[in-house]
Every structure is written in structure tokens, then in C-alpha cells.
Image (tube, rainbow over all chains, first blue to last red; front, side):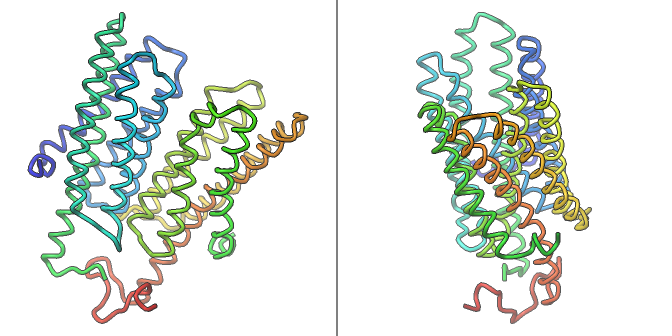
Length: 194
Length: 209
């Protein structure tokens, strides 16, 4: 697991998956629901933030990374909370609470990892496991949705959206696991927080 | 302007306005529209928690947590501004909503320009402070439409609380931004550099107590 999330190619793949998934979902949903511009713009902003996260990681711009990670996690948490407004099937009642819980724990443990005084870098393992669980939950839920829906564009859009969300969370967890490694490297070079 | 946003009391007052105002707004909205409405506005509760943690992490000089929380708060403000567009009723609201979205988006972008490591422009803080005041005036104008036309006392109280809480959240973020710059200048005065960190035998402020 640790090797997967510190792998360069995996990070690039997850960023591309997240951006493509979110934008493809936007395009497909704008075909079927032309009136819902607000949620489409919301996902487009998340995709932009993801691109800037990648480029600021490549440039080692630590402060921008911290802010963008917080923004992306908050966008994911707000999206999961807004899912409670559209519960139609039994499968929704099972998976929506799981998704809300997982994204809330990811949000909180992000700040525990990054804290200056009470930092617990071991929580990164927790985050990696949670990200994998979230991926499984999103995929099972959206494949269930796709099987039920009667419209092919809807089915494709829900799967693209699930892939986009997974890519988004995985990219954030990738940066978290790298920042830790980055800190350990700096400490090996004699850096101290004070 | 600079004195206002770097004053300690103003920061504390704005944090209290933001956190208490958001919770009070949820209570008033629950009285007006029922418990089901409160369940759909749960993000506001998370926002209130974030404002409280922003203040406490500022007090503890926990820079990394501050950066993340500021990003999260600005993102909630931006998403709230976008969501406004799904429920517009009068032509006056189109004007207010587009000013609201424009100001919030510029605040979001210029936050990253200020905090950037390579292309940092601390002068943009003045832009942010001016935009924060424009934001406050815009919300005041928007809600005063509802304030003067409704006859319900609870509705009027809800509008007032909404103004106070929105302005409080945005102003506390801008306060931290204007302080981080000052904080950096202070650290540089104490001999801090980007590459080496603090000099040896330097005692950090929070360890002195």
C-alpha cells in the first residue's frame, strides 16, 4: 500500500483519472440535465483545483498544496453531504452514510497528520486504507445505480463521476503520503521544526 | 483598513460572529422551516467548527493546519455562492448573486497568489481586505431587501444573523491572511530563512510559556 501511494506514475494516473472523470461526468450530465449548471460548475472547480494541486506539487510549493488539499477535501465532504438529498433506492440508504463517514474521517485525519504540535504521521496508513474503502464503496454503489438506470448516458455519467471522485481522493492521499516522506527526508538532512 | 484587520479584538469578534452566528442561523431556520431543513444545511455546522479550529490553530501558531482550514473555508464560501444561482427569484437578486460569486471567486484565487511559495505577492492582501468589505456591503444590501419586506419577526432575525455569520467567516479568513504575512516578517526579523529554518538556540514563541 505504501509503495502504491508513493509511486510517481500512480499519482499522475490518479490526477488524470480525477480530472478526466469529473470533466466527462460534467459533459454527460449537461447533455441530460441542461438546467443544473450549479453542480456542473462545482465539479469543474474541483477539476481545476486538482490540476493546480499536481502542478504545485511538482514545483514544491508547500503552502499552496496545503490550501488546495483542504479545499478539495472540503468539496468532497460537501458533495457527500449533499447526497443525502437524493435517496431513492435501498442501496442508497446503505452506501450514502458509509461515504459520508469515510470522507469525514479523511477530512479530520488530514488535519491530524498535518498538525504542527500533535502530528501523527502514522495516520497516513489509516488514510490510505480509507481511500481504498471509499473507492470500493463508490464503485459498488455507482455500478448498482448504473444497473438500475434506464438511460445509458446516466449510467456512464454516474460511473465517470465515481472514477473522478476516486481519482480526486487518491491524489490528495498521494500528496499527504509524499509530504510525510518529504518531511522525513528533510529531517534526515538535519532539519528541525523549531 | 490594515489596523482593523490586524487588530486582535476584531479577529476574536469576527470568529465569534462567524461561529455563533452560523449555529444561531441553524436554530432559527429550524424554528421557521422544521428539522428537515436543518438536516439539509448540515455543512453550515461543519463551517462553524472550522472557524473555531482556525482561531485555535492561529493561537497555537499551527501554520499547516491554518493553511488547510483557510482553503476549506474559502471552498465552502465559493460553493455556497455557486449554489445561490439555483434559487433566484427577482431581477435584483441576479445582480447581487453575480457580485457575490465574482467577489468570492477573486478572494479564492488571490488567497493562493498571496500564499504561493514562488510567485508570492503579499500586496494582494490589500485587495483581499477591500474585497471583504465589498462582500459585506453586498450581503447587507441583498438581505436588507428581505429585511424590509417581510413581516415575520423570526425571518428578520434570521436575515440579520445570516449577514453577521457570512461576514464573520470571510473576515476571519482575511484576518488570518493579513496576519500570516506579518508573522512571516516577524520570523524573518528573528533570523528565520526559507532554507535553514530558525537559527540555533532560538526559542519558539509557544514554548516560552
